[in-house]
Length: 242
Image (cartoon, rainbow, N blue to C red; front, top):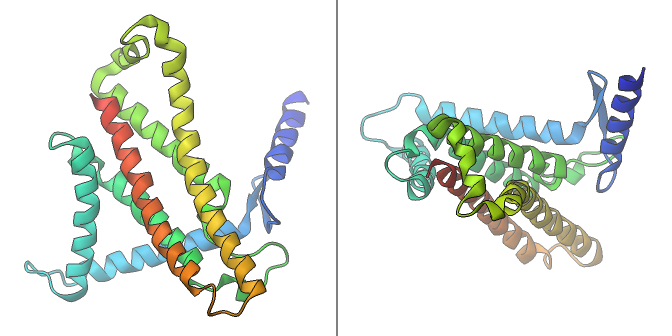
């Protein structure tokens, strides 16, 4: 009885933590933001299609679209190599690359595609990264990743870092593991949400031509946010491996 009441109250509290109205789906007794999942599936589908096109009929000397895709992979490889070093970067390229391309795709989908033309019963389609649940999930994945990295290399000895350089710093070192995902999630969420709100307000107040520079700035800022998130994720993993 009591666990059911607690579970119900928990889902209610989570549902109330929102910005704006949302189109809810009930999946397995949990309420999820349907409009966020729709855009996520769209972004993931685009990434898969681009990956398939980039690897179809691959040649030893890349040309055309294959060359573009390999350049994109080289870019995220450089992010991992710069932060993790020659010894560890290869095994973390898939994780760092997935973070970068997913956030990049979500931010661009919100900035470029006119989702507001598609009407929903409640809420509206937008960048998944303007939903705090998405950014928190990405930040928690990053936290799990650097804990896994540290434990896989050092075992339980990884936890010695909490009492270094002196045991007096134990509370601060523990607090740091909570502030990392908080800063990652709220930085990404705040920047994307602020950009979309700015464009929406300007579009409603002035003709379309005026908000265009802000929209271009939002596209640039979305790209930078993807770079910052993936770079910090790689830096946290590198810190755990030291």
